[in-house]
Image (cartoon, rainbow, N blue to C red; front, side, top):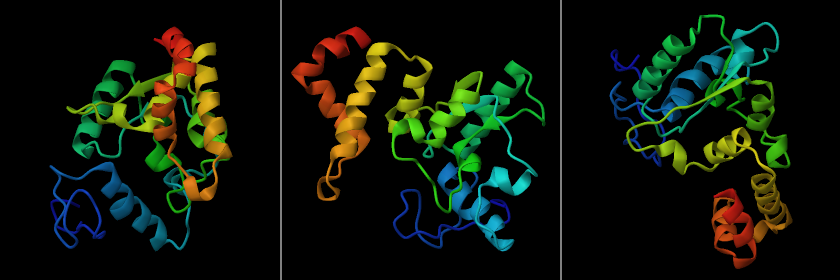
Length: 201
């Protein structure tokens, strides 16, 4: 699709290009894959669902969870996947969870708490987790990726930390809504949380 010139940036506020400009294979990211490929194909069939639901006849329980950043170039993502495929012997029938394709991008339901999120639910099924990194390690700057990593290295101290963060997040008023990332960073600077952070370190 990139080679044919059919893909162009459609969002004036996007970070990756100018509206109407052709999307090149060297620059396309998961964000454009979702907005310019996955969603239009599904919409063409007059439905709004996840790609997984669109291509499967029934619900599928994942085996491998991929944690990644939507700002990673898609060609790097594909390269990461090829290494994973070769290293773990994946086949066309391997059940791999990738949020872009597993979540309904028309209406992503994140749940009322972190543990109600589709990410946490998928991790409960998966026996293996792979973290995809690009040259800038952008995934490590993403709150959801860090949450996914925390589930993988779950400890009582880390669990308590995220419970405190979730508590603050849930108790906020709509007018002062802070991101989970901002709350977590503030918690790490809180002297009362320092003993807990030291145990996590």
